[in-house]
Length: 104
Image 1 (cartoon, rainbow, N blue to C red):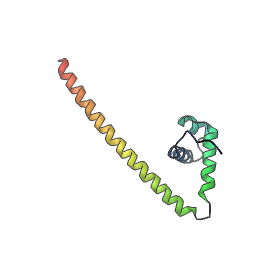
Image 2 (cartoon, helix red, strand yellow):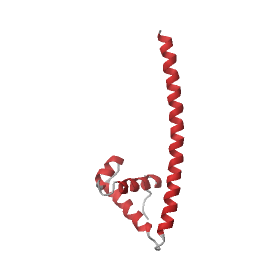
Image 3 (cartoon, rainbow, N blue to C red):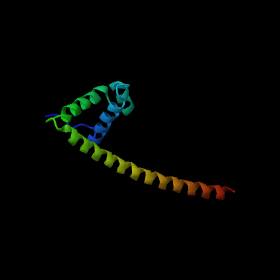
Image 4 (cartoon, rainbow, N blue to C red):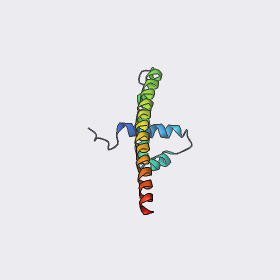
């Protein structure tokens, strides 16, 4: 029985997608270094993903649906983060204006 990975499943999938997006222009080591993981971990994740991608020859539709779901979830996460950043920026803008008036 193997031990549990310290990296969440979503992180592993995103790492594999990032490596594949490089389309052969970057090595495992280069992508892994950007993510702060070992190249061997990334290589293992890519191999596992490739093995799962074609379990019964009908992975095209399943993979597309899974990819669509993953992208929608990522989009929702990014939209939420954008809202939080906009709120933080507005608060900081108002604080800066307040302190600028106070200094005068």
